[in-house]
Image (cartoon, rainbow, N blue to C red; front, side, top):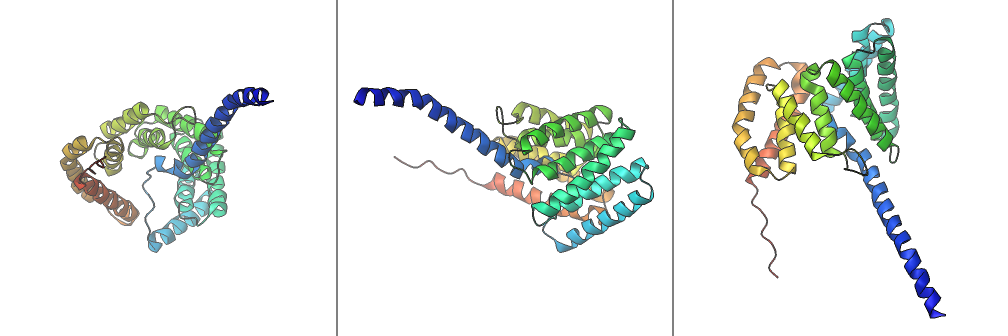
Length: 275
């Protein structure tokens, strides 16, 4: 009676391993929903400041009114999509975030249906899909595939839109998404698009910061250290060109990220434990 039991155990063992791998896959996909928005370092990156949340809501309401008054106007449409993305970032839980994101998705889809060559429509559709993906688990995988497609379309149509936003966003999407077979994550693709964003729009701080954060993630500290003087020069120059209320939240975000990068560079490596 013992032998059949052992044989059965051998037969079940590969199935158990397959189940473990599938569980790991599901875990990676679920994690994707939590990190996917990192792919979109938009002008309005989240910073914990009630005034910024109030401003994002005000801009959302104003953009909605403009769009309702001229719903065939392309600029009014994509600006409403942008405002949806920014306001959804301050949602306190999944339900309001999904509701706001779906508004942005709907308006961008309508714009693209009328004007398929609208880079802004494809771009902000991708960003609002990112907000929607944050509210999902397994469903995030399909959404991320669509985000990639829309960003590639925006890149083909207008590479310089939003200071090389399509390249920057694609790079961060490939950086933060789990790799194959769970999702589309790829270090080589992330590097290509983040470096290309800097080439296209070198004076935009978000491009430089995003690239340096990626280098740090890959353990390339010496390269980051070499690039820090260039980052300082870019930030100094940008203060004159990107000024005013519309840029306050971006500057709060950029300075916060710069300090984190500098702190990481100063960290001493942890010595391995002695056996």
